[in-house]
Amino acid sequence: MSGMGASPARTRNTGPRLFLQAMAARAYVRIMGSLREPTWIVSDAVFPNLGMCAFVLLYRALDAPRSYEALALVGGVLTTYWINVVWGMGAQLYWEKQSGQLQLYFAAPCSRMAILSGMAVGGLAATMLRSLVGVALAVWVFRIEVAPFSPWALAGVFVLTMVALYAMGMMLASLFLLYGREAWHTANALQEPVYFLSGLYFPIRSLGALGVVAAGVLPLTLGTDAIRQVLLGPAARGLLPLPLEALALAGFGVVFLWLASLSLAHLETLAKREGRLTQRWQ
Amino acid sequence: MATDRAPAVETRALRRVFKGARGGAAVVALDAVGLRIERGEVFGLLGPNGAGKTTCIKILNTLLYPTSGEARVAGHDVVREAAEVRRRIGLVSGGENSGYGILTVRECLWMFSQFYGVPAAEAGPRVDRLLEAVGLSDLSRTLINRLSTGQRQRMNFARGFVSDPEILFLDEPTLGMDVNAARRLRAFVLEWVREQPDRTVLLTTHYMAEADELCDRIAIIDLGRVLACDTPSALRRAVEGGQHVELEVLGAPEGLAEVDGLPVAWGAPHPERGTHTLKLRLADGGRLPLLLRALEARGITVRGVSTRETSLEDAFIAIVGRGLEEGEAPS
Image 1: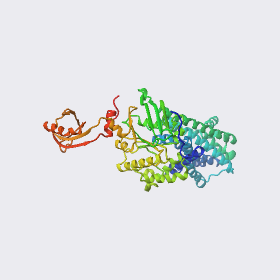
Image 2: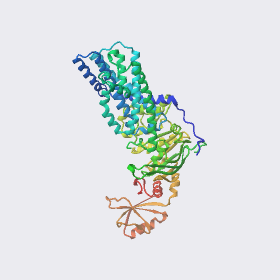
Image 3: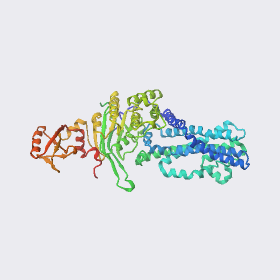
Image 4: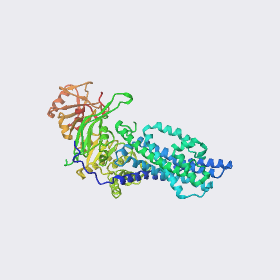
């Protein structure tokens, strides 16, 4: 059998246009899901901010410096994103497999990275709405104060943090799919250690050398510290110089995106070779 | 039907072996499968559970590697040119669970059209036409999680057509669907495939009547091997002809195995009338009166007689050695 006579495909978008089209379509699901299920506001926006509220009240009771309240605010806001990265992004492909939908993605001509990017962009947009609940609590209920800051610097560090976090989520999606329930249980078990090592409610510098190690593996630790430095200046008691942290976050983003692409390709090969993953019972 | 272009599907010596679970024996799902499906055909794959139909569909859809052999779709190799294959195919699996409950029916079909790169200007009108065709226009703005099972199946069916594929794979598409909906969808498939000469459908189904009604040709597959491949009428002709007779009888002795030298099979009893069904095949229809007299002579009363010609199901049983619903052959 030769390839002679192979037919031209029907007129359809390909390449970067198809990538963007598929990404936007998958992101649309996340955003619509968030808008049409307001009950999620309680579990994904209010509950994660209760920790922040508790720490703000504790710092006030102890007469701690006011900057500590802002530390807790940043931690609370980033917790909503972290929850979305692990349970929304990481678990998504596993869930798609369980619902029997994964094979439809694998049989479609668009890139699997476009689907994952769509999940990330949609999750980020949906979570942004939720994280605003934390900011609203901080501004209007607790009247938390921050130092004068550059909105451009804040936007830049925030974007770098989000790219690093969601790229990590894209990589986790493949790992969750590959290891199924084991990965699920591991992520569950590591939740509190990650919160601790990210210093979500205290200055990361308090962890000493452990904090530096955590910053070397967890983009959440670096992102939390960098945003705090932008908002509070020296009062943030930052772990590393801000430019270095920004550079490291950018590095995390690139490395995790590369690893996500690599693990997804490996996963697809495995699925085709062993017949796994497109069957929900396998 | 054939065009000067490559066939829609072509396989040679296609073989797929799955590793046995927990060190068990390997399972040969496909063995030496050679198929050639021309453009414009509606081609059926018929076989009992475990015959290898779905494995074959998965390989042709680039979801599974063959262990050996070769498979081409629209002239493109499914392993080396998977991306080219994906641009040309659509897949519908009966009982699948596509889409997200939080989306409306229309949004869900639109979403899948985007994964195939359908330009925005075409996607909307095409989705509307498909919803009309499957009778879901009134529910286009309904959330998927509010649909009944049958409505959801129709939406899944429409999803397969949303990219206007050259080659559409329908894997048990009407599984569990009500009679009217299945009839409507069968009519739509025929209309769709005749609309453009290069559209091709590969159908697997458990319903003989569906295969008979839709398919230009049928391959009968069992234990991973293609046992026969021809038009439905040629398959019927290939098995021993004659008339199939069903007799509703009273007073037949238990275990009766032959009448007048002809083997008989026992069919369903009719307890409300105290009768039984006897089935047999007559090579010569003119022999029926003699048979009835032979039964009378043995004290068996015949309450009813029905005859029919050889069906696709008869051909299937003759070729495979058992019916579609009888499961896998003992290994």
